Image (cartoon, rainbow, N blue to C red; front, top):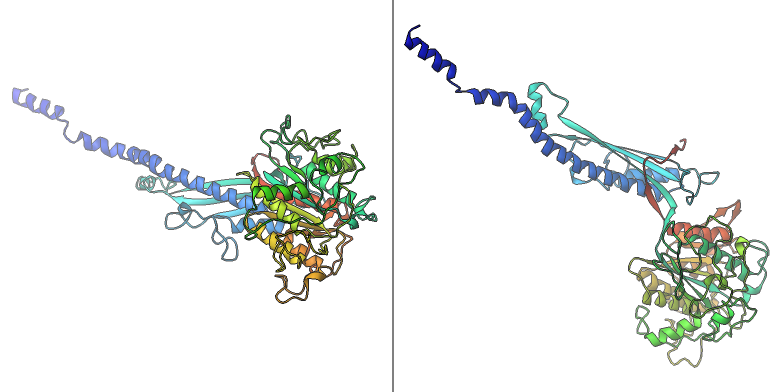
Length: 534
């Protein structure tokens, strides 16, 4: 071979021009695939988080409607990411940006299913009156890819889109609670001395009402879940969850409540004329600390306390924590409501209906609200629970009060039902949730309010006991009357409660109130779930 030919072959074989282009052709799918993993899968992860958040919201919205399975399913649709899978313009409240066009394919499907879980013992269990106590929501959507779909030019067509799925399970109210600051305002006027007649219990109305309060205390959470509360100081444990205070009307001589109402004795506190001698610019203004302290000393039986149970658990018998003797530094709200008698435990005389002054609850409501406001916790909801026959007929308040007015705005000598409504309206505007329990409500009442110009309830008509209790409550869902009450007038709007086959007993009503104060919550999707038949 000549040297020239040999040199030519050597140059030909050693020339690497165009090699990079060949390798680029082979590596381009890999480069695009890696870009797709970074960009497209990152987008898919964000979309999945949005879909999961939307699914959580839909499940919680549905759980809030339980045990009504139909309403729960409809609510889940409305709060889902699906724009077309539910009727009505309210569907798709939680359609996040990446779940909407033009970014996403508009084919999201939502499948909510009501059912039952039994693993959570504190949850109301499915039975004859509860068809479903949980709801499971599954949502699926398909999102497009951007870089990965370029691989389709190489025949890889399955990566033009990605399908993502999210599932959430939520349980109804009863599984989680609070925290709350609660003021129970209880009627101890003379009418509460009369026997109940067996509609609620075999004792007096005062004793039946106190047993209802015991149910509240057995269901509230004094401390964090699954913990022992520890030692109470001044009535409260460390890291208290639900703190409960007790107020009564008529007012009592300051300093007599602890030794009498809370002392498990047969003594009765001294009743005084309604003492509402406080200077107010308006119902929204806090009284001075001195004036509030005076009102609290006369209307309050026990301050905000969390020593009513020794742990969050109520699995044992006699769950309430009683005290053998009164203590001004750490009074027992359990003693003040009759001990642990509803659960077969220690009995205590508790608050007594000594009479002496007729019904007027506007002052007690005002004092309870201002006390809650003055002792607010940043993470706690203020709640007032009022039990009364609703007929404010206490006559004029203390004639010696230099602050008493005659214009019908608290504190006034007239229009006692309307005053109570005005006080409650100011409390609700401040964020307090109010429940009213009518006990032995008559069809009339509030006669001292009617007849004056402009003196009409917001619901129209004239003031009656049913009207004022209804209008004081935050909503009709928060308004209850017991089985001995009238069902005429505004009482027809009261929420009906059935428990253990009995309708509108105090025990059922107070159980319903605590249930309403609990919250629905998400649970692990691995929890055993039995679908409710359609």
